Length: 64
Image 1 (cartoon, rainbow, N blue to C red):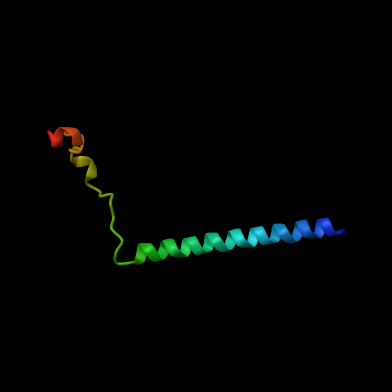
Image 2: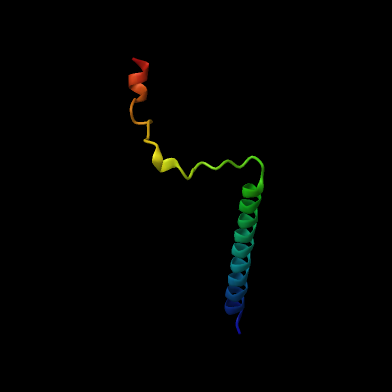
């Protein structure tokens, strides 16, 4: 094996390991955020039963 081939193999392994480490860390951080006491659910089960009132007035109409 020549130097370029070895370098390519080592670089590929480094990129794969770095990507794996990053994805695992992000997954752990996401799990910690979900388990924290400050997490708030914004989608409720009965959301479809109530009409959306946010489109009745626009910010321009409220200023008038």
